[in-house]
Length: 190
Image 1 (tube, rainbow, N blue to C red):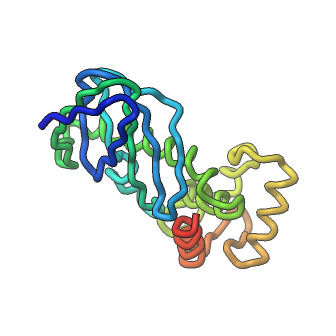
Image 2: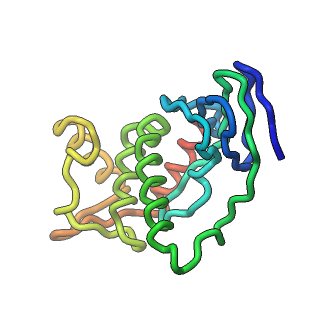
């Protein structure tokens, strides 16, 4: 099914996927709180657009609900296509892992805009942790968080004092229930 957009016309994708047949669009991610995250990238003919952040689940990680809106930069023709998880067979496991990696990178870039600094650090720690919320201290450095060393350690100490995490020997243990509640509330409130 084709959809034609005039220049400056907007469209919510509503979990549909499209191939751009003619034209150019830009995308915006709209959180359930109403906060908008603009993407700098211009998508052109032959490219695929859709809500890929919610396509895969990443174990032990909360991904806020996101709606994708596109805006046509010029007259644009979109062709809808069916994109389902079963598109990846066992033979294409490498492609699935590659896509999950790219989605994870996109999510990490968005987290800094979605969450407070405390919640951002907790979200990144969850990405490093195993399913039980345990990670090695060796894996963590302030450089992983794109903030200054002093700011990281100040926030990290605060999170420990508020019982979001604790340290024993060479490991960091996350209080996943408490962290999940904080991330969920902040994602909803924007």
